[in-house]
Length: 149
Image (tube, rainbow, N blue to C red; front, side):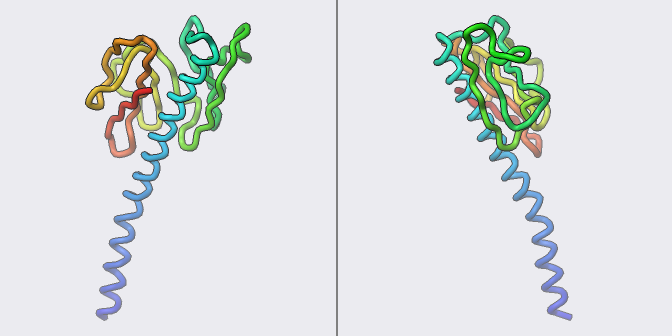
């Protein structure tokens, strides 16, 4: 009887801990992807005379684990060199680049990269350097995150 009670207690602890561990691992992977995306934007700028396309965008196709910074339509425009970013957790269709602060944070597993912004105390604010970028997202569990390039 005591053995069954102890086994039941152990199972309860495991069942309570597993979702929290999974959420933590997922959120860590999203944060890593956000850093990779910002590094991809910086690489794109370095390869293209510090210029984004006329309309800032990250064309990411119909989804998948590879994002293309600067890709428009089905190709890199003109003599542009696009930058490929391999994502671990995010779907590339859920990432966008904008030049204005959105009205609200994106949903879980969606990332918005904002041109001309940086993070201060976890909040995107207008940057003094227009070539700064902030990435914002909502993590599982509802926490909002802001990462600066």
